[in-house]
Length: 116
Length: 111
Image (cartoon, rainbow over all chains, first blue to last red):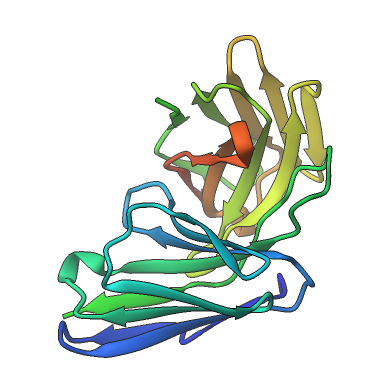
């Protein structure tokens, strides 16, 4: 196990639903990330949080709303999604700030989201 | 534009055989290059990390090479096992630790 857990593992929702994805890291890291992985496309970085502060938002539509209440938990709130938002949503964490040491990201198992 | 291209897109080999996966990148400036293994239905797991001064790194049956001059990397898998069936993703880190992901190579090892 990588120390990063995600729930739920699978989610099916309608376009009018509101749901949330949860990520928890048990590695003592200070940075957390949300990625979207669509079929046959590279991983797309969505959001980055360092020390609970959002440091990056890669032009993600407002129907995706992240929340980072502390350095161990990260949420992705979903509302009025579109069918093209169906994908695997991966959470990752890393320990940033170590000079000279590449910050390996540890990924969770992902949430497979299907939007009907 | 920073890009990472991987080849082949997919590969089928017999158990016990060796194989080599390729990664070409245009990321500049270059900080480091990582190879990840992603099993079906799971998140990626780091295999190797190489900085510009390293040209080879091994992790068990996995050996990664890096040529920073030609901006190419390869991942060689020796004596493949059924459990090696997965997607292998090349990730290049540039300025400010910005990561650029390759599209991955899907490897299937058959008995």
